[in-house]
Length: 142
Image (cartoon, rainbow, N blue to C red; front, side, top):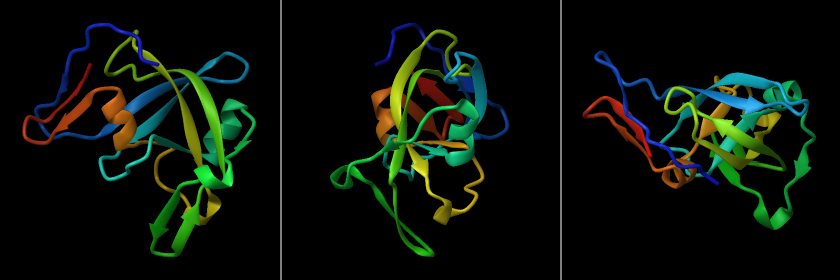
């Protein structure tokens, strides 16, 4: 669920870097900040690394077989078996008060080190009303 507030576009004069800070509460209530990639080619909601989940202290939730996502990679097809639910995620570079809760899929070890701890996919970007403009070099949300 997304709370309402006014959000202004973040603009860079050099180039668009589709990377943002993500503030997430750990299981004990402390807020942790991680780097997340806004990935227009990733169609799902969100993926998170196992390392990040362990640092946050959440338990893995087994994803029912009929709800698992599959990804084609160079090494073959990988299936997402586990997820977590994170309450009150904030993207502080886009808004200090807008937050959302989401279920994230845990990146399996077979995919190796993805380079980022969290990936935000197109479906979640649509839900959050995010727009990335390569032409204007902006990321707008809201």
